Picture 1 (tube, rainbow, N blue to C red):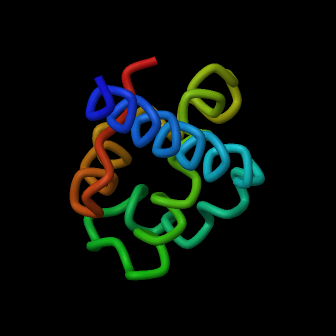
Picture 2: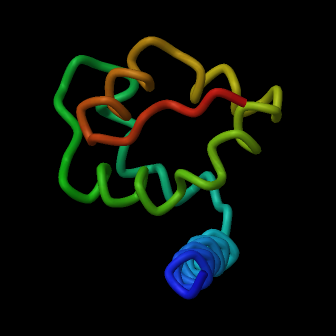
Length: 92
């Protein structure tokens, strides 16, 4: 019984920590400006681009719902950049 209580507590701590990290992100599409050349051409993404994509990952679904941003974010090159940076493209 004690082991299951500890497991539940650990799971709750992990979930709360992830929620706090997600809430700490300020969604700003301008943060992805470092990725413009990689998204609009075939150049590989920079380290800065990859760090910004990882930072903005909780915001990507929000960007995909915005018609003005969707045309840039939901492209084959944008998906390739996200994949190259090790950030799975979200399924919203």
